Image (cartoon, protein in one colour):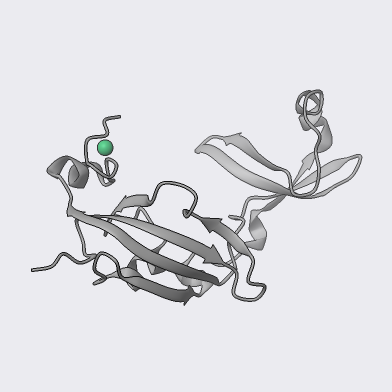
Amino acid sequence: MAEIVSKDMVASVHYTGTLPDSGDEFDSSIDREPLTFLVGHGQMIPGFEEEIMGAKVGEKREFTLTPERAYGARDEEAMMSIPRSQFAQLEESAKLEVGTQLVAQMPHGPAPFTITELDEENVTADFNHALAGKSLTFSVEVIELRSATSDEIAHGHAHGPEGHHHH
Ligand code: ZN
């Protein structure tokens, strides 16, 4: 039986992601190695996996995901105003601008955010994923498929295209 994208397979894919409204490309693997992941273990955004289930090596699929099936809706509660003085040390070596992406050290771990406003007093930080609230179009080609090793299934992630990557 030919192998298809299904749970506990390791898939390597090339993909290009664009914003359906503008056509702008936000990410692509084309100039890199294919993206390798373990199918069915939450490594990918949910809609991405669902849309390529059943695909064979060499098959290409194009689909558009609503935000709910991609990075989720934007959460306006995830905006925070932080006194600019807290960035004083950072500003000695880096320039703060609208659009700058930084990582805050929070009690539960690192939290990336984007600066959406800044003035003399305050920095407005948006902790939403940059692609939250957006529909996303993906063009995907399946490059390789293999069964996952028992280690990979136990760890919940792929160990590279050959399954030999140790970490
Ligand atoms: Zn592992």
